[in-house]
Image 1 (cartoon, helix red, strand yellow):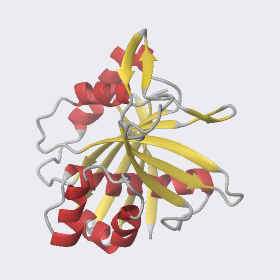
Image 2 (image 1 turned 90 degrees about the vertical axis):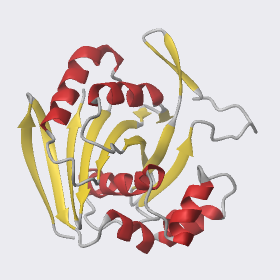
Image 3 (image 1 turned 90 degrees about the horizontal axis):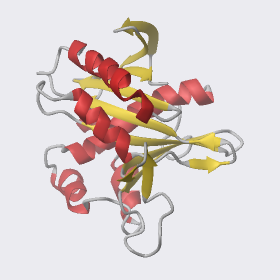
Amino acid sequence: MKISEVTLFFYRMEYTLYECNFGLTATEFLRKSRNYFYDERLKIPNLLPDQGIFKKFYERNADISPKIKEDSAVWVLAQYCSVKYLNNPNPTLGEEIIINPFGSNPTKGKSFWYWANHIIRGKIYSTDIDRILYLVKPNKDRLMLNCQVYSPISPNFNIKKKLLEKNRQISEIQYTINQTANTEILIFIDNSNITDLSAIFEGIYNFKKEYFLEIRSNTFVNVIVWVGSSFKLYRVSLN
């Protein structure tokens, strides 16, 4: 893939813009990658959340739904992170990039999950992670990124409210000694009616300004626009 990267500033915040003329729509990409995103996952009991939605999309050619879109959003993030953290511009899905569904109850009642709840400013919140993204280094060590994805249907959505909700759903997880997983909030736009991103960038700025005490370390917001066969990723740190 031919990818370009530039630095931009919106509302006094520094964004990395990562864009690619990929050649496939999000729907086409997912169906082409069906073996990884659907067939292999079916082999693991209870791995797929809302399995019926995946079955309709992959087996019956139903329209793409927000739950399905989460994979394409995280895959775009993985392309950028593979370059940034692994120095690998051509990662292989399932090898250098591993994208796992997760959800709010990964144990299905079988055992206690240590991170089922977490505390932010003295209040208890339930943990809900849409996808866990692993980046696998050549020595097989892994970087862990916990992802929450939102796909707006129309331009009229409250970005600050949505960021607050998503931020409160992800636990701050230390997965190895002195290594905390990234908190990645993804706004995935594949709707050609949503063209003005300025309100989104303003909302991100206002969220950071108002709720900075709730923002944990290694927290990023990713605005992904995948309309047609090209995608753009606007990535900003909240720390």
